[in-house]
Length: 266
Image 1: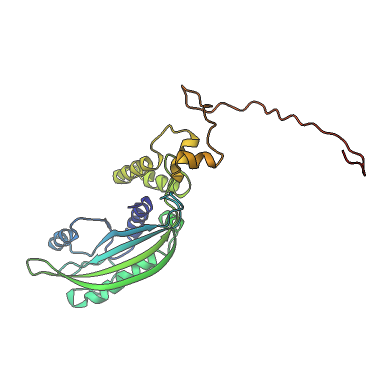
Image 2 (image 1 turned 90 degrees about the vertical axis):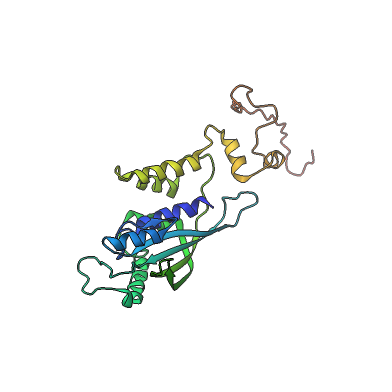
């Protein structure tokens, strides 16, 4: 799975938090969201949202796997507890399983609204990573667990066009640096800091490569192809201890010139 798939899912989870009737938290790729639903039903039943990445496709440039436009299929699942739903204060009606269609449709609208409205930094970074939504598909599903309990569910699939994946072995840059800053902004969010450290390591490692090594690695060039670009160090020119190319101090390109008067051939 590409790094852009991870980044867009992390951003979307935080973008939706507190913006729908599910309130908070929105779950990132839970292994068993049904367990969360049943647990909520025993206490204060409320909707649960889970976000998954089901597929990621890229269009590499040559051997540069992280280059080119990335297409990410993101699935958002909305689950209603098998009992009367507790909605936020200010909602004038109650939703039970009889009105599950109304509740799911309303939350689908709230999810879309979160991608369009508001002046939050998460919406701004979402628009940095996602350049276009090619397609959206919604469908209603009735999930039945072994006990016979039926759980109303809505599946929303977004086909996202995203920017290129991050390069390798480079310091954080652009939207990736902004994402790192946002994840670390709340000192109490230990999960955010953990994700920031993880994404940072996936981008910046291995560390200590020379610029020409970073270039060759990101474009996936074999030595012969790299030398053909004219950007590779000259054979035998690297310092055996540091691996650095020697600095070019001066260039001597003597030319013999002769001034020829008009009409004369030299």
